[in-house]
Length: 134
Image (tube, rainbow, N blue to C red):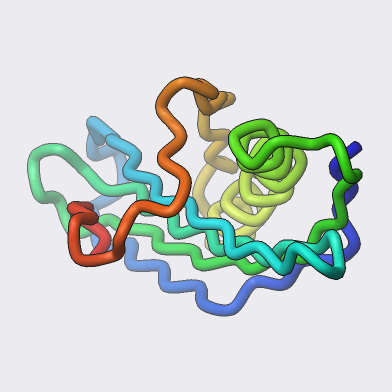
């Protein structure tokens, strides 16, 4: 059983220089990594998320979050990866919603997102990673 112990927002960048009434076409980018400490049955995750306008309007939100989870002896890494993401993602949604609401614009609620277990790469070398968030 994967259990969230705590999380923190390690970085939050928000740019909103669009004129009132401007229609935005938002796109999301996500990067999620988990580092395992097997003997302790603990892992640390890093979630990087970006919301930006497809047409390069001056609007962007970047959030980096870190979290610590514990897991059970029988949990497999792809399951830990997806379950930890599922537990952390609602907090990311809340951070983005509250940040945009406090800025004077309507609170932005990003869509729910699920990781597919089959897309999880365990022990993939970092140099092979490609992400627009790098």
